[in-house]
Image (cartoon, rainbow, N blue to C red; front, side, top):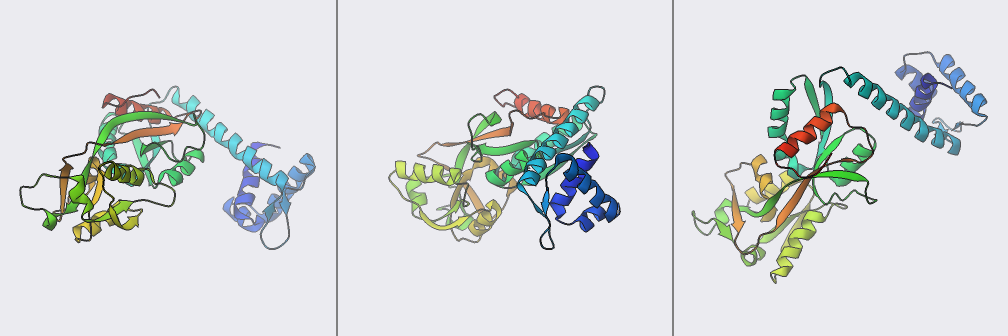
Amino acid sequence: MDIRQLRYFLEIAQTGQITRAAKNLNMEQPPLSRQLKLMEEELNVTLFDRNGKRLQLTSAGELLRERAERLLRELGETVQAVKEVNEGITGELAIGSVVSCISLLPPHIKSFREKYPLMTFKIAEGDHFLLGDQLEKRNIELIVARLPFEAADEEGRYEELRLPSDPYVAVIPSQWKSDAEQKSITMGELAAFPFLTLKTDKTTGMHERVVKEFREHGHTPHIICECSSVAIIMAMVAQGIGVTVFPKSVMDSFPLSAIAMLEISDASFLSEVGVVWLKNRYLSRGARRFIELFREAGGRGEP
């Protein structure tokens, strides 16, 4: 069994059909069927249940799929590492970011491309769990996220470079300001307004942190909407539906005149931010340099 056969097997496993897999591989169906038969004969197992239109992996097939994906991934990383020995920093850097951290990326990407103009970027957006899954599948190398990283299902799974903390601020409709010169607001005053909170079924860290601060000041926010989208919450604030509390850097992505950002005068709580990556995963030279750029800008930690 060789690398070529493993690639054939994975394509069949992904498509569930030999005909479609052969098309994707730019080959005829009979040779692909023959290769699958040779693999099963060599291993003395059945890799697929052939009942119905779609092939289903057997338990042996599932094990081979898991190991084959790992082997091919490690092979790709090895080839990349060897090539980078004598090459400059080129290629594509795949990064993930939670929506509330998107504003942190553009200045760093700009600085990075000034140093390494041959690098390109692929950026994925999502919550901790979606991005954590993409990291595990090696579709991205790094994540910029609020901490703690909620997708962590085991201690020591990830490395983190902590960035400077981000203060929380109140975000309210401009017309709700008491006067044009208002610069701050109290937790009690915020609690009197309808409240919009950033929360998904799984990612609740920011929501819980804000609610905790209200309770420590003797108030309970009147939550009228839970939403997973920063942009939607901002649009609702602009329409005068309610108020919210976000890390200050979020506002860099939403310069809307209908929204006012106020300091919270009787509370000083911070949002921890960091760059996250898999602890035992090979990082491309581009990824390592990108982490170093964040550290030079004031991050804390070791890659």
